[in-house]
Image (tube, rainbow, N blue to C red; front, side):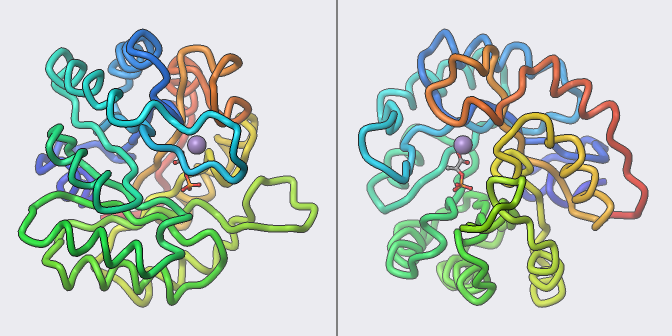
Length: 263
Ligand code: PEP
Ligand code: MN
């Protein structure tokens, strides 16, 4: 039984490698629906991810549909019965996501890095029972990652899952973000009660590496995976190179093995 599945969805379904998958960004109702309908076939899938407000490094690129995309998610929640996860980066986004009935929230790497934003979100979650995923901060600062978890806990958020998405590198790594595996390993030692997932998509930056990074995470006994998937990645409006089709993701999940006990 997976703690991640229970914490994030309130159910336990016996899935050994819990998967959250979906597009980097919700781009249109048709794109989101086509992707979700295909992802639904993957037995590991416990929830769908979809970025609504996108934290882009440079202005001028696609910054997400915003609030309007929450309607598409509500429609698809009704149609599929699947839980949905959305990134929130401030209090008004948090409030809109909760109002739309989003099941799982997550803090992105550019939010975890800023205690003011983490505190603002934590304050708007006071008295709300919603699971929250906390990605590692963009830089390899373990204290900020743990601090974000602590701020949420102080606001009464008990269902928290950490997500390892790698760390900014100005070097020449083949990966978009350096995994620095020792940091999530230390996180787990210091926060043994917080399950840890891996996001190989943002570590890799490239779809060819998704499988090997995922397997490395499982070999470190990480509790689950968050992977970006788009029905036609080549036309994706963000993170096109790292997204896989639902069919490719299904094959990746079949090939992955759990060699160690992870509960
Ligand atoms: C994302 O999940 O699409 C995202 C923006 O991720 P990160 O915060 O890890 O960069
Ligand atoms: Mn992305």
